[in-house]
Image (tube, rainbow, N blue to C red):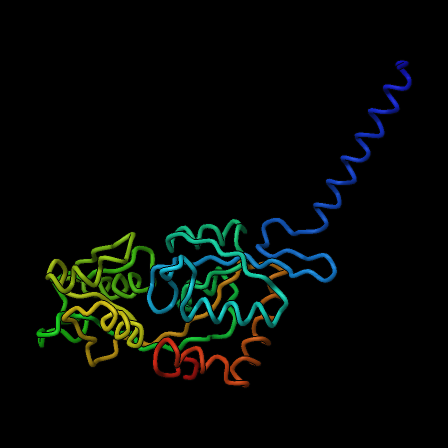
Amino acid sequence: MTKRTKVKLLTTVLGVVTCLMLITACSSNPGSGSETAEEGQFKTLKVGTHAASYPYGLKNSSNELEGYDIEVTEAVAGKLGYKVEWTITDFTGLMGQLDIGKIATVAEHVAITDERKEKYLFADPYIYSDIRLIVPEDNTAIQTLDDLQGKSIAVSMGSFYESIVKEYNATHTANPVKIVPYEEIGGIMNDVALGRVDATINDKVSGASKIEQSGLALKVTDTNISKFEHSFPFARNEQNEQLVQDFNKALNELREDGTLKKISEKWFNEDVTQK
């Protein structure tokens, strides 16, 4: 093979490689968490969840994801022609992956707060919840955070439940509530039942479901601490503005045809999709 022939062959190979790279780059949008698809195929929607919060999301005995958040996400994705690619990690890790574009959104009943709205785009709420304390069944002294001054409360690390208690402590510095953050939330209910912490905090319906599932001698208190709306967060960029609009359209259709209510009643025995 002559030197000129070798040069021509190398040029041809480099040209093919360059074309393949361009095709790959044009077929997806790195950092968006969602990908386009070839004709007749599903697009991919990368979604994160913790998969350890009954009844929102968990793995069943067959190691498959199930729960309210999971079913709502799959229903929305189906409406939009997406196939969901799930990422499972702790809540702090989920939000970090959302920030760098590894996932498109988070299906973990993320509360819509003023602080988060400054950073993320949110789809319309699909959960409306009353926030209450969970205490041992025989405890009659604790109803509100005022009753927990000087006592301890277990919270999921980085969660908005933790932020609720921190905000309370900011105005009650003389005798604040002692925050005990948990990276893994699976042991929280058991620790409350055993008296290792005085209380935990959760939304009313899932708190009741968790107590029923655990069989522990616990109860949800009667007094609302606050009320929150929950939905899907997205990183702030132009592409996600359209994706949020698409999510809202799908959520509205699922609400109108009764799908959201049906999923809610399956997991909570009541409709959490309405104010």
